[in-house]
Image (cartoon, rainbow, N blue to C red; front, side, top):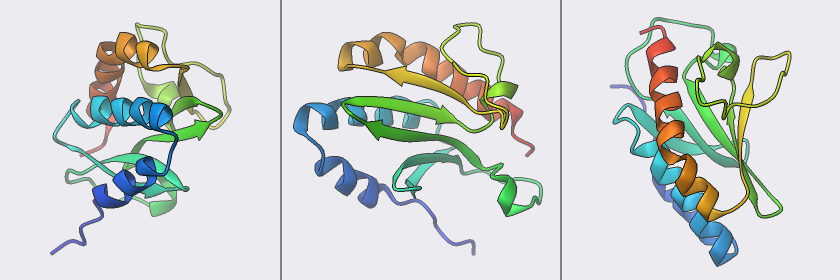
Amino acid sequence: MAKDIHDSKSVTALIQTLDPDFGRMVEEVRQIVLSSSEMIGEQIKWNSPSFFYTGEMKPFNPKEYKRDMAVMNLRKGRVLLIFPTGATIEDTSSLLKGTYTDGRRIIRFDDLDEVKKKAFEVQVILVKCIDLIEQ
C-alpha cells in the first residue's frame, strides 16, 4: 500500500497561525484548489500549503516534481499561487503571470474579493493542469 502523503491537518494548523483576515483569504484559495478536482491532495511543502495530483502516474524521477501542481507563497498579506509547470498550461484567462526560465507561472491575490473573483478561472487552470499530467 502506498504511503498517504495527504496532510490536511498540517495545512489547517498553519492557516490557524495566520492573522485571521489573511487566514480567511488563504483558506478560500485552499478550498478553490481542493474543490477543483477530487484528484488534488494537499500537504505542507517548502513551508507552505502545497497541492499535488493524487492519481496513478507513470514512473518518473522524483526531482522532476511532476506530481506537484501548485504551491502557495504567503507574503505580506497577499497569496501567490505558484504553478511549477505553468508555462505548459494553456491559460485563456491570462491569470498566469511571469516568464521564468524554469517554467513556473504565478497567480497573485491581494485580497479576499480578488480570490473570489478569480475562483472559476483558477479552477479551469487546475483542471487543465491535471489534463497535462502523464498518467
